[in-house]
Image (cartoon, rainbow, N blue to C red):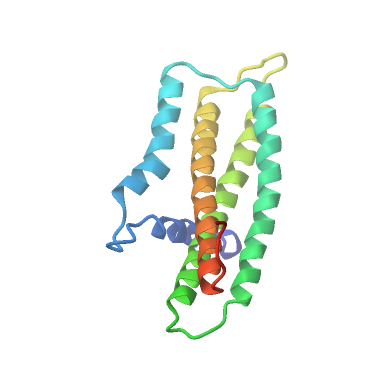
Length: 180
C-alpha cells in the first residue's frame, strides 16, 4: 500500500503498544480513550458548536508544529545517544527499566513527530484552500487540527513523564540522591 520508505504503520503500532497497564501488561482501555478517543470527542464537540479556526490561528499552529518537529527530531537523536550508552548486566533491573523506557520513549517521540508533520500538512492545505479575503478555516481541517493538537499535547505530557521516569531511574542506577 505505502512505499516502504514512507510506511509509518510500525511507528503507529509501536506507539499503540505503549498504551498498556504496567501492572498487568495488557492494553489499557483508559489510555486508548485518553490518547485517541478524547481528542476526537473534543474536536467533535468543537465542530458541533460551530468552531472554525481563523487563518491567523492556523498560521500560529503551523509555525509552532514546524518548530516542534525539529525539536522532537533532535530529542529522538538524544534517545539514540542514551541507548548507545546503555550497557551492563542484562539481569540488572534498572538496566531493563532503562531500555524499556527508551524503547517506549522512541515510539512516543516518533509518533509525536508523525502527528506534528500531519498537523503541519493539514494547516498548509487549509491555508492554501482559503479563498481571497476569507479568514475562517473550513470545518474538516478545523476538526483535524483540534484533534491533532490535543493528541500532540497529551503525547508530549506522556513523553515528559517518561523522560522524568528515566531521569529518576538514572538517579537510582548511579546511587545518586535526589534533592533533600
